[in-house]
Amino acid sequence: MAIASALSRFALPAAGALILSLAACGDLNPQQQRALTGTAAGAAGGALVGAIAGDAALGAAIGAGAGLAGGLIVDKVQTDKEAAYRQGVADGRRN
Image (tube, rainbow, N blue to C red):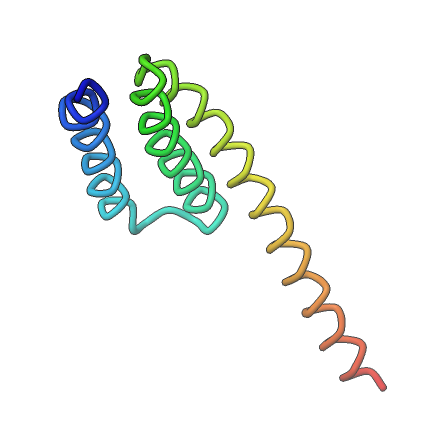
């Protein structure tokens, strides 16, 4: 019962607030969007796990850091793929 109480008290409202805040970020560039999405998803997941473990705030903080790192890694991979595609198109036009 304590887990359900912790989830309903902190984690679920926090996750909802994070999701709603993402909707207000339409003018961000792709790198910022990926970093923010990773941070928000990590914080929400961390808060859920932290609530189960007994410290939702610590879980959210750790999850946010991990999510930010993950979002930036995803951005780097996506940026590299796009650059390789553009390079391939340019090489194809020259030949």
